[in-house]
Length: 133
Image (cartoon, rainbow, N blue to C red; front, side, top):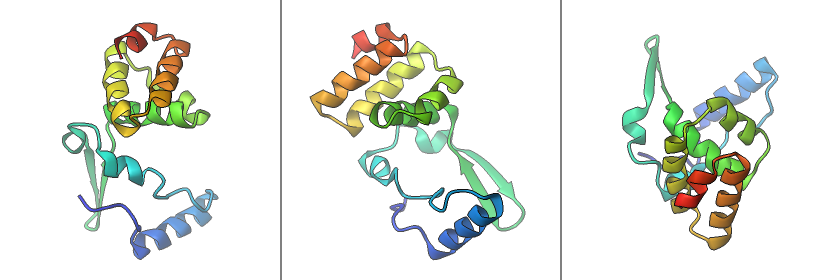
């Protein structure tokens, strides 16, 4: 897989046109998660991508629910806010959160992050998952 930074000019232009059309924030499509890509995507990520072909020129790969849980757990601990709401909407099982939490610890190996991750899981009412880490 190619490094996500920088985004290709054609994609940036299309994203700007889409932002204008749909009244989205100018930076709605960005490379913010590029470091997660570089540190390593969850095992099986590529195989779980859900592909949709639209016409002759567009192929979209959607991130699976499993991987959304991984990314949203990391973002919830790291940034909070709407990521927590998104994670709740995914309604993850304890097993899914445990898998995601193990991956999160590969993205930030610091003791403070592990502490925050465990505290988040407890507050999210998954104390049993926090205890397994």
